[in-house]
Image (cartoon, rainbow, N blue to C red; front, side, top):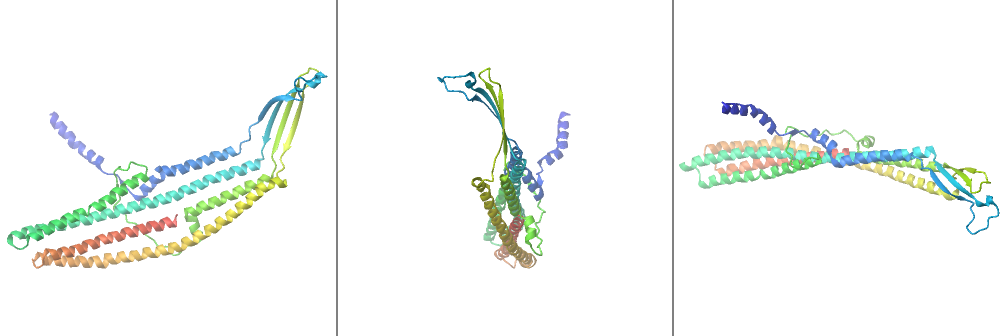
Length: 416
C-alpha cells in the first residue's frame, strides 16, 4: 500500500517538477529593466547625486559661534601697579558671523546642479549598457537560429547516410560515400560549438549587466525580431532633447551659470557681530561690555578681482561648451544619415538573399536530391549542392547579425 502511495505521489509531483525545471524566459525589455534597477555602477551615480543633495543642504548652514576667554589690559608680572583699577579684567568674548542669505541660496542651487550632472552621466552609462545588452541579446538570437539550421542539416545528412548504407550491399554506392556522409555529419556537429559558445558568452555578459551570477541559467524570447524605422529627417533641435551627452552638457552649462550667479553675489558684504564682557580684577571697577558689528567690503579693488576674473573665465568656458555642443549635434546629424543609408543597404542585401539566392539554391538541391534518389547522381555532387545551400543560410544569419549590430550602433548614437 505504501509503495502504491509513493508511486502516486511521484506522478502527482511530476507536473510540479517539470514547472520547476523550466528555464526563465526573459525579453529584451525585461533585461534592460533589470539592468536599470540592479546594475551596481548605475547605483553609484544615484548615490553620488544623493550626496550632492545633502551637500547643498549643508551649504546654507551658518559658521559656528566662537567663544573666547582671556584677560583685558592686564599688566605684565613684576610691574608695579599704582592703582587697583590698573589690574585689568577677565574678558569673555562671543563672536558670530552672519552670512548673506542670497549667497547661501545661490551656493545651494549650484551644488544641487552637480547632482543633476551625475544623473545625466547615469543616463549616458545606461544607454551604453542598453547597447551592450542588445548586442549580446541579438548575438544569442542569431546563434539560436544557427543551431536550428545546423540541426536541420544533420537530419538531412543522416538521411543521406542511411540511403548510402542501404545501397552499399547492392553495389549501388561505394564505401567511400558512406564515410563521406559520416564525415559531413561530424563536421556539421562541430559547427554547433561556435553558436553554443556565443550563447554561453552572451548569457554570462547579460547576467553580469543585471548584477546576477554569471552562470545563472535563463532563456531569451526567440521570437523577437529587431526592427528599424528610417527617420525622414534629423534636426539638431530634436537631437538635443534625445542625446544623453547633450543633456549632460546642458546640465554642465546650467551648473556653470549658477556658479556665475553665486560668484557675482560675492560683491555683497557679509556681517559679523562681536560681544565682549569684562570682569575687572579689582572690586573698585565696574563690569563692562563691548558690542561691535563688522561688515566686509568685497568691492575693494584688491579683493574684487578674485570673483570678477573667475566669472569671466567661466563665461568663456560656457561659450566653448556651447560651440562644442553645436559641433556635436552637427556631426551626429551627418553620422545618422550615413548609418541609416548603410542599414537600408544591408536590408536590401538580406532581402535579396532571402527572396532570390536561397530559393534558387533550395530548388537546385531539391532537383539534385530527386536525381540522387533515382541513383542518377553521386552523393558527392549532392553534398556540394547541400554545402552551397548550407553556407548561404549561415551567411544570411551572419548578415542579419551584422544588420542587428548596425541597428544597435544607430540607436546608441541617436540616444548617446
